[in-house]
Image (cartoon, rainbow, N blue to C red; front, side):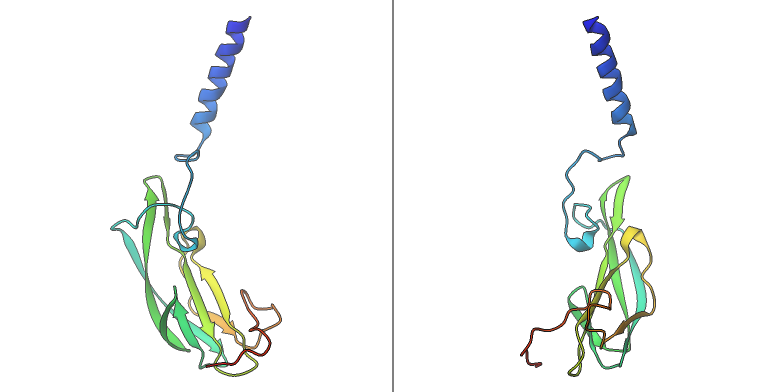
Length: 146
């Protein structure tokens, strides 16, 4: 009787291992922009061009923390494939628009989840300060702009 339970347990374990996606039991490491898939970038990448527009225009635009110009602006980004074969993902892209005048708030978004293409244009409404814009952040009271 005990041997029957051992054989059943081994069979269940083998079936569960077959149903698990490749790397499913491994700990995944990586930054927020590497789609949660660990590892250094591979030599394979995708260059994507897109446009960032703000209402009103004139906001400083950053892509992955690097300034790319004043809106409206056309820019491009290189997205690397990361991970192991069978479990690879494209880097995600963080786009930020910094306010150009009082009454405006920082707007940001992360794009390219699930290996999707970046939207073009990426649009932000700079005066959506009440948490209504995606990722909008109201500056602290008394903060002075530079």
